[in-house]
Length: 103
Image (cartoon, rainbow, N blue to C red; front, side, top):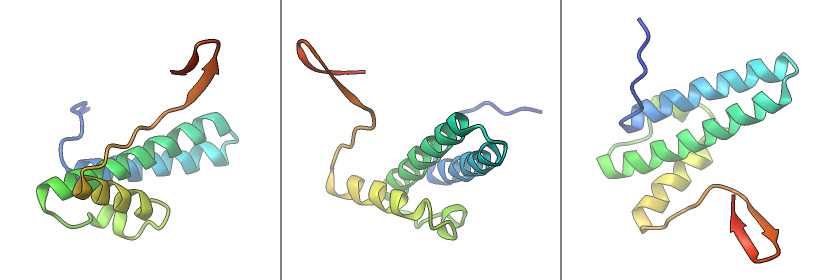
């Protein structure tokens, strides 16, 4: 049975981050660099969101991320950003004739 519900708490986001990191490794081994990069980006975003949710919940880092040094800094950043009330934007800016526009 497939479960398509979105992640709702820090554990869910931590689990999704580990899944995306595993998919990153598989894609890298298979030689599909574009997919590997996309999975790594998703893993980073999920790890950061896990930190944000953990701060809101008052919970500690999930064991899903505690032993993964690649994702630890992103969880910490999300936790600290939520603690300080910082807003972080993920994306790219491209210059055009009118200045900078979000893509």
